[in-house]
Length: 294
Image (tube, rainbow, N blue to C red; front, side):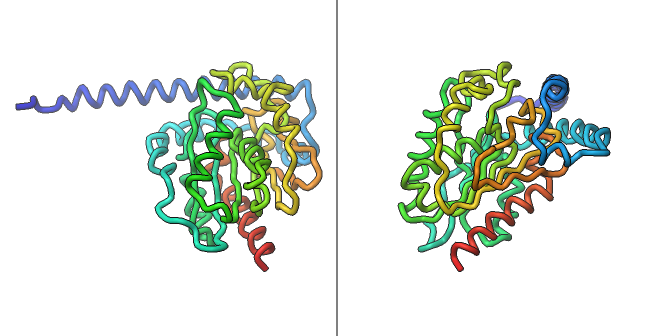
């Protein structure tokens, strides 16, 4: 017979894990915020981000700190749900039914889109896919090819597509749209806090995939050479207080055809939980689909 569980020992273990997680979150937040402030002293933000906090910089900075810590905590609490969110679709899309493909960022998993999925469903998207990928021990092109193979296995070759990518996931969305079979049936793409021009903070990343995100690094070079598919609605959402993409100029796409908008003052991870950001991204995708199907 098994001995009765020692609940006191279990609770102590959980408390230690929680305290360790909070310490990691606080440390990561402090490092990224200090790094971003130093980068801001040397590089001016792009105009569309500079105007977002003009006259209220202190309030924006306090919101950045609060949403950064909250974002790390939310990430830690929801990570175990990743395999459930990222599972294969239960059905094939109906003829002409658009499919939203959500791609998470570095060191995250499909649980990143827990709040986005119901918002997209309310906007009429009946099939939302959140394929996951492993961030360590690999490179950008290997991840892109693995995601492409999974989407080809999950979906018929004529299913219309919309892409929604957070951080590195935004760059992977751009890479997938450059594939001929995906690009010609893509209707819209939204990126959230994507380091289109790279981030100097990536020098501290674990693994070559993360370190490849430095400005001028291998990922930046690949993304800069990618063509944008024609007639696709493209939106880049970026926060004026994003401390993970430093300097902020790395958030700028700088290409024709892209709409660039500043979000409310919210952290890099906080974008995934902010109601206004979720509503804007879901609304943009739904409007783009409606225009193409009209």
